[in-house]
Length: 107
Image (cartoon, rainbow, N blue to C red; front, top):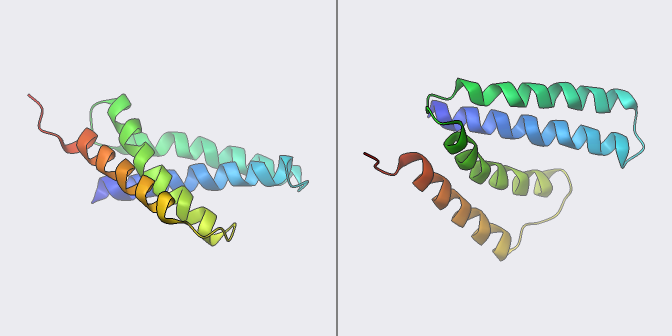
């Protein structure tokens, strides 16, 4: 459960920080939003180091599945773009892949 919370916090930090930079560069908003976004992205880089999994590559590969689901929800909530069947299908496939990467029995 702790791992999933860390993945969610990392995802929200990555998406939120990137979104603030997007607003600055693409939306003509204040540079301060861009700077705040950059700070949040640094925090995003720190959060995964609290994972208990020993492999950096596996943590980030599994996180990718969680990130995709969070990005779909972000788009739905913030951009008001309702996900379609293929968005959900792709997200489910990614979560299955992330689960295999993290929890497959290894010797």
